Amino acid sequence: MNIDNPTLIIGGDSIVGRYLRDENPDYFYTSRRKNSEAIYFDLLQLDSFNIIEKTIIKYKISTVIILASITSIKQCELQPELTLLINVQRTKLLLEKMNKLDCFVIFISTNHIFDCKSAYNVWDGTKSPCSNYGQQKLQVEDYIVKNNFNASIIRPSKIIHNPFPLVEAMIESLNENRKFEAFDDHYFAPISIHFFSKLLKLIIQNKEEGFFQISGRSDLSYYTFLKRIAKRLNLNTSLITPVSALSKGVAPSRYGTLEAYNSLSSDLLYQPIEDTINDYCQEN
Picture 1 (cartoon, rainbow, N blue to C red):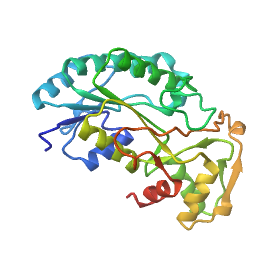
Picture 2: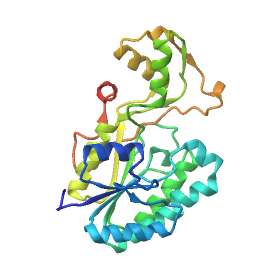
Picture 3: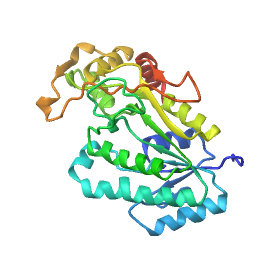
Picture 4: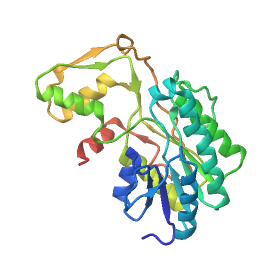
């Protein structure tokens, strides 16, 4: 147990949350599922906020990582009222309670606070969210800044973790000698969860306030990304066929990169795609 810096993950069942739990078994974490190991917490249930407060006081927790949110871009578009309640209103309430308890908070935001129409957006550049999800995250960012909370805000480009559903679906198809369609007009800048986790742990250690951006080195299409994964796994890349995102009802994005920024380490700025792929393929 890290008695010098007890840390709580709010949203321990998220992809990033589960990875952090595996890496750091001494971290406390919350779950909406009631079990003996997790601390019950649900942003929709106001009573559960009292549980969090009592836990923080009991275990003298000093750092809180907020991962709990609805991260589906599609759901945020289809259910704006519900996602606004969870991602903004209840998250603001959580931040207020953490501030009163003198906790250092790490809030995970998104590159979607920008318009996704240009590459390498700077951390203090113009904000023009390209989705409801991005707009909701930006509202929380602004609230943190306005109230001068003891917090850091991390904006990552796309974090991938094994198993990544798109990659796993491709692997299954290629193993069965079936063609697999991939968007050649929809771009992103993936980073591995391992790379992201290194920055997160550094922030926890230093309790450094402010903004952080971490990004893939360059933008590439999902088609190109999957071809490179398939090659790395010695699969038949000729079975991967390009298709337009628009033809599948998906609005394509040309950019996902951020201008990486942090005040702690020059080694945790950009991750080359080769390293992202290697990290993914080496995960168990």
